[in-house]
Image 1 (tube, protein in one colour):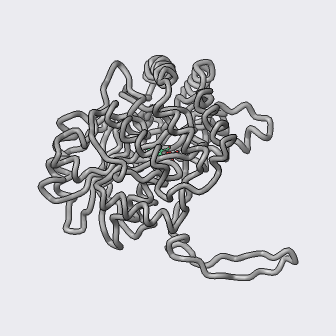
Image 2 (tube, rainbow, N blue to C red):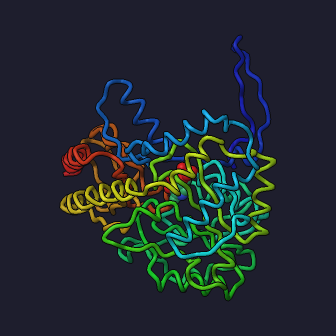
Image 3 (cartoon, protein in one colour):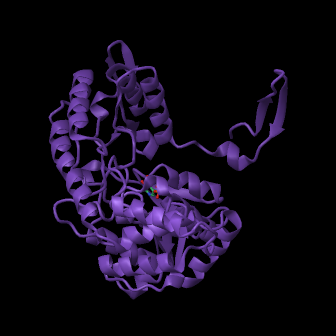
Length: 411
Ligand SMILES: Cc1ncc(COP(=O)(O)O)c(C=O)c1O
């Protein structure tokens, strides 16, 4: 257990010790943001660092969306909205899910939050009690286990491997279920591997959820960034019985390059959506009002920019994956979606590079940042040692230069 006290230093230099909660003491800060901060610090010293660490599209938010926010402000749409979001936005969300996935929901099933991350937090707060367990597949997005722990729950980690295209072994999932298991978390396409669960995997997990009376929490934030003509598969599309126990989490951040606008949502059975909205009404009230109007434009306005950004991500992936595989000791799966690659670099662990011992992916990421000036995130941050995550939300020129630096640093 980490320390439960904090030492505060006053302006006069005197120390005071205060108590903090177990929750705050146990929380691990986001390793991806930590890596980003280190890269920024180096950059501020004038070092030319290439960022492969960030999870934000490098495109500006499309103009029509920005204009809609300005228009909302000019109309005076700057007041509170209902805590769980504008009715017009809820309508737009259910219409978009119907258009994209053929699923029918009512606006009462939606709770709009301050980003997809907040939507997920609302889900855990609504469904978890202390000691409850959630099945989480590694490599996982860094916030899942920490959010679950903040709500008193426990993430039960099931490893997946690049060699299996990051598909879970269903027998392993079954063996991990206990009478405390409340939900199975699905993130397809995934951060950090860009992995897509196949239909048999998805059906296997859905069958388990029905058999054991579990919820499926499906984080679909990357569902519009798919490659080679793939179509998104949501567990909610696997029949009414599965849909009734599925909670969708989504948002505008990645699809519309709206990371800073902080609009996300959950779609759930009405009773769950209502509870989540009640929690939000006490915690934050509504998400930013002009940003909600911008999200309406994003969902209902022209969609060409979504395809343009997706196509550019695919172009970058098509350069990056073969270039990584050409580096000795690096094996990289071809991601089916999202904007990350998760190469296996285990062949380089245990080496001594330029006089530095590299026992693990953390040491490798630090070496690459300090010696090659490329920032990556160690696989250990995502629960999968032996890998690195590289985001390709950066220009092709920088990706080309970054791969050159990586190769020189490793060979
Ligand atoms: C898998 C996954 N889910 C959810 C989110 C949250 O997105 P936001 O809170 O920016 O909408 C992210 C952001 O990086 C993510 O990678």
